[in-house]
Structure formats: structure tokens, C-alpha cells
Length: 143
Image 1 (cartoon, one colour):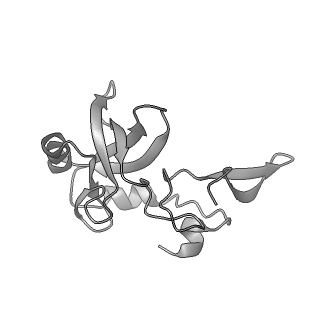
Image 2: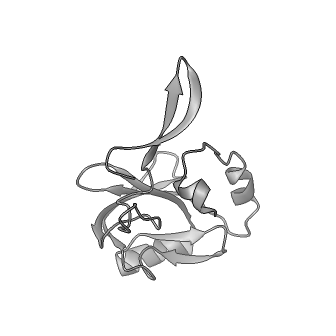
């Protein structure tokens, strides 16, 4: 991923993501990490059976990286783990929500202008004017 895509203000949504996910060799479902205390969505990823079983065993949010085709325990390399409080399943049993508490400095792999990991991956919003999309802007304090 490019720095401009991950941290810039140009809107470049990847509408092909689910097509790419569908082509992975693993069977996966969406897995959302949500702060147990605030309700803020921190990360959206995917989980296969191994990721879910690992999450339960390790008590840490675990995903299946569809781009690297490997198990991804959030925080394993950064130290910014997401400790599981609860795991929710939707009515159709085709997605899960990890209710988590951050055990580190942030949950996003990007960093703000001071070099600190961002709390979550949702730190920009779509900027509009007169009913049209203009681009992106940072949420207050997320630069």
C-alpha cells in the first residue's frame, strides 16, 4: 500500500476488494474489531476457522490476511494487541465482531504526524460539498 493511499486525502476506494477476497484459497468471513468501551470500529478484516480458533485460544483479535494468505494476530509484530472481551456472531452466521480492548498504543498500522500509531483505522471521513464528493479529510486530532 502506498503512503498516499493510507494517509493522504485523495479518495481512492477499492471497490474490487471483495472480488479479490473471493479469489483467495481460504473460506473467510468479515471480522470487525470494535472497542468494547466506546463502540468505535477499529479494524475490518477477515477470519477463517483457524483465525477464529486462534483468537479464542490466544484471547487476541486474529484475522486471516487475504493479501498475504496467512494468519495475522493483530499486534504480533507491533505489540499493539487487541484483547478480546467478547465475540459476537450475526444472525446469518456469516460475520463476527471482536469486542476488544486495546493493549498497546493504537490498532492501526499507520501513524499520526507525531509518529504515534492511530487508535483505529477509521481516521478520515469523506468530504462533501453541494451533494458531491470532494475527497477526504482527517477527523479532529487524527492527522
